[in-house]
Length: 361
Image 1 (cartoon, rainbow, N blue to C red):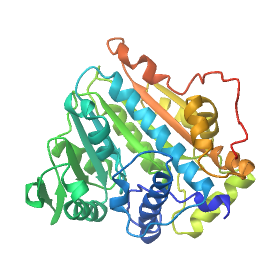
Image 2 (spheres, rainbow, N blue to C red):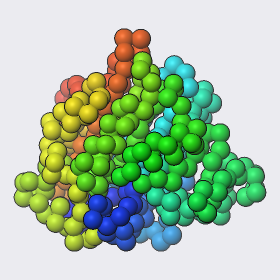
Image 3 (cartoon, helix red, strand yellow):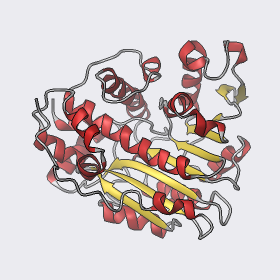
């Protein structure tokens, strides 16, 4: 399997053709992503007892895909937990382009202490996507019982003819990320508070819309909370489209009907860091996924993951991970001293004596 074959990502907010990728091509990516995550979970890369319930047809992926999705989920979780565990009180999470993501369910089961201290979790996506997810929640007991003992006990609302799950802690918001004014009003209508520290999650979502639209989302998120209220924005997506590997990656996704419409406007990690600073965020901490996997992972965890499967695709692996990044943008004042470590989370990788070990049996 080609390295490029793993570049099918999920959690994409669907929209009109021309401004976004082809609807059918983009819509399939959230299912592809869930399948890849389930494959990684099944082989022991990480724990998520919920992802199996959003997958219709499980497929065992190649080792390079399993490890790639492990790295992706691990980096997103580490960024999210850094914010939530540091925040001294109630906080909000806004998952932009949530798709079939199961992060809320994972938090509820594995980090209920964070939920109990006052967490409100918003999932934003196209109406059809959230309607489908609502159906899965109401149908699958493992998902349903997170909210209530029976289907009828799960709190829902009807928005524009679609039934969405909306509880005290978990709130679906149907919205198109391209339309920022509607996005803002819809999130506020769902109970978003400007006075509560908030972290926004963008897992392969902004890169699929045109840069002027994604810039508007970034700017809105930077001003979504009131002055003096800390906020963060976590982004995982593709980068480096102009080298040979990047060109093939871009072409491959274009042919699948889901072009990376935003990747060329900010083609490097340096450009992405400057982008967020220019669009209203005080700081941005970023690294490519080679740096994350080789240097930020705990050494014992690193060794455990490397031993899970026979792995002989190291050069290909390094190429792929060099074309993805994890970023944490932040906005805080001197009163938000708890944000200091969050704001610089990916700035200073620890020094390890063994880096890029063979990772094979």
